[in-house]
Amino acid sequence: MTVLPALFANLGLLALMAVLTFLVIAGTGWTGSTQWRSPLLGLILGGMAAVVVAFPLPGPLGATFDTRAAPIVLAGVIAGPAGGTIAAAIGAAARLGFGGPVAAGGAVSFFVYAATGMAFAAVLRRRNRDPLDLWALITLSLLATLAILPCFFIGQPVATGLTILQRFWQVLLLGNILSVVILGQFLRQMLTVSHARDRYRLEQETSRLARGAGGIGIWTFDHRTRELEIDPIARGLLGLDEATALNADVGFFRRLILPADRQLVDMEVMKARRTGGPVELRFRIDHQL
Image (cartoon, rainbow, N blue to C red; front, side, top):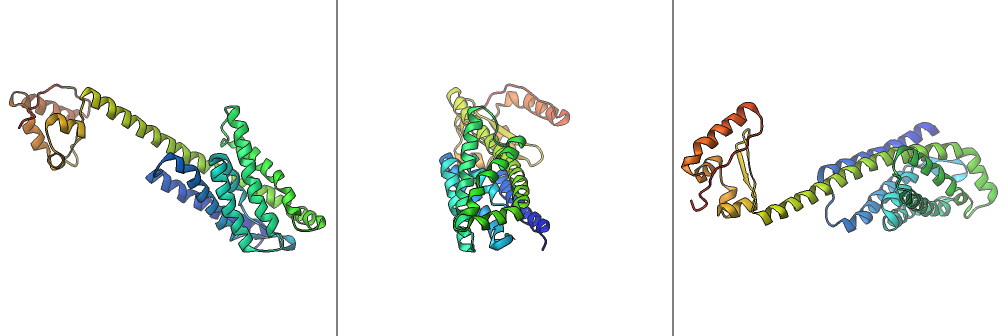
């Protein structure tokens, strides 16, 4: 396998893992407390790095190359010291397990990448800039590439390190830029979805507390499925227990409406079904039925 096809295969593997992570987070949301998100991100990104390390590009003099920079440097950016350190430790262990004459320097590079990401994010956030926008990611990839150059001289002669860099610097630079940009954009979208979900949950909880204080309940009826849902506050106002509310249908709810108001409600509901527009009406409920 030539260098460029091998590089793009490694990038494709990284992108596939990023897509799967994005789909899982977007579909299910984060679980548990927010305090565990940084360690969880560290585990996810460290796992990505361990996978790409297992499928490296062979380089000169026993060196290997992969797209480890992206998950590790971005762990430092978005997961902070805790998540970045976890990701770096996982990646370093994988690199040492893979072995080779430059394994020591390769293992150290994970911690250098993570530290670069942490420092870069700290500087940009103090300036109120997004560390995951396109130009920030390109800048980050260049800085991270420069930062790990000394790792090529760990545990081996200077001449060997220089030879590896002279023969492979283009692959190192191109791979780091592409991988950081691609994974960074996926993570940016994932975090956007996660933050939107957090805001929605907070708004729902705030609304529930406000409605509870004001005695405002909500019931919904889906005309297509004929499903009726009654929230806990409305259940209390109507004098219904949970089992009764769960088994209630629209006929049951209609019987709760005072007979004098049923015709008005029926007419307005039919109008809403016909026009698809909003309807506002007042009616009385017999909660002792």
